[in-house]
Image (cartoon, rainbow, N blue to C red; front, side, top):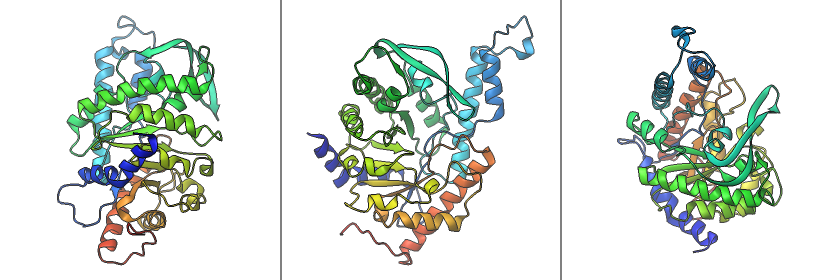
Length: 373
C-alpha cells in the first residue's frame, strides 16, 4: 500500500472509527468534538527545584536535607505527572497527557536515548532560552526505551484516554549537529526507524493515541517529502484503531498544503490562534480530507480567552471540515504560561467545545463544510 493509499484509508474510515473511542461515557451531546492538549504544560515549581538538586554535585554527606537520590527524583516526577493528568481531567479534556513532566526539552530528552549521539554544549535558541544541542557522531541506534514507562504510568492514574506526544524524526534531525550522514534527510530517515520502534512498543503497551511532533515541518520549502516518507516508515505497522496525529506549530502552511494530505495520518494538529487564523484559508482549497485538529487558544499569550471567544474560534474550524472531523486543542504546548493561566485556558476550551456540540445538536450552528459535500 502506498502512502497515498494509507492516507486515503485513514481518511475514508480509520480516523472516524478510531476517534469514537475517545468519546466520554455518558456524553451529553450527539455531536462530539474531541478535545485534547498538544503536550507540554507548566511544571510545578518544585519539580524544577528537585531536578536542580538531583543534577547537582551535592552528596548526602554535604546536606541530607538537600540531597535528592534516584528514588526521590523518580517520586517527584511521578507526583507531578499524576497531578497534571488529573488537572487536565478536571478541566474536562477528553484525551489527556502528563504535561511532559519527565521531559526537560523536546529534542534533548529523546536524543539522550539514542546511541551515537553526544552533547557538546548548550546553544541559544531564542531570547534567553538554551538547549543542549545533540551531535550525531556515530551511526545511530535505538538505546533505552523512550516513552513506554511514561505512558503506562499515565494510563494507570488517568480515568480518561491518554495521548502520547513524541518528537518526530525530521525535527530531531533539523535540531541536531550531523557529523555522520550526508544530509538532514538521511539522518531523518535513520531516526524514523527508531521512532517506528518506539511507536510499535507504545502500541504493544496499549497506546491508542500517538502524536508525532514536527514543528520544523513548515520551515523549509520542499522538506515535507522527508516528513511524508518518514511517516510511512513510522506508521507501517500501526493498526487503524490507533489514532496517529501530526502536530505542526509555526511556519508558512502553504509550503506543506495540500501535500500533507498524502501523509498516512489521522489528524493534523495546527497552530492557528496565535496568527489570528490568518492561514485558515490555506486549508479550504483543495478540500481538507482528514481530521483537522485546530489550535483555538493561544499558547503564547497569557490573556485567557473567554468561552465565547473560543466558541467563535471553533466555528472557524467548521469552515474547513464538518464537525465529525474537527478536533479542538490549544495552538501548542502550554509550558511557557503560568500554570493557572494554562488551566483556565483548558477549562474554557473544554466548556466551549461542549457548548458548540449542544448548539450543533440543536441546529443553531451554520456548518459550511459537510461530510456530503
